[in-house]
Length: 162
Image (cartoon, rainbow, N blue to C red; front, side, top):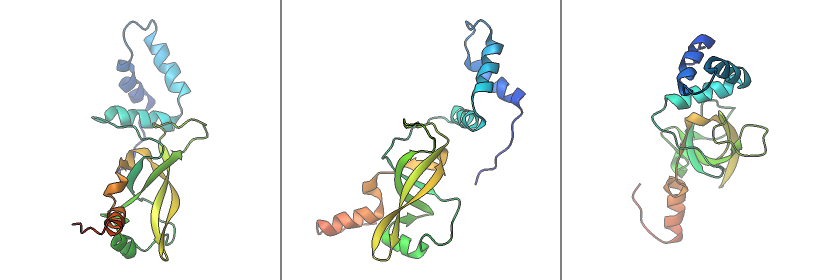
């Protein structure tokens, strides 16, 4: 897990101010107004995004993978999940259900996403819910999830290499 630090507002201003062009009449006023209007979690997300080389915004319904940082009891058996192809190298697979805001429209830049992830339970795959930091989520095609590769191969009587 990445270490988080608090940044003084003066440093945040120094980082944000160059983003505004010189033609803004009162640049300092605009920077101060923006920083006072934006919630801290949104500002943190903005600064993290600004620091990335590239970022592909997430979409509702997009299949993803992520490493779970919190475990609540025993949602799943890691060995069985690995055997079934639903857990690999610590990654769980699922899809974006929504952002973690109360807005009606999906925001791909919301700092946290609601994810439905696949879990083997008894004799079937079920979906469980989790809330995950947006920047900890990677797009991952459903067809590349080992469990679904195996299901497709069985359905079409094919042999695949894993």
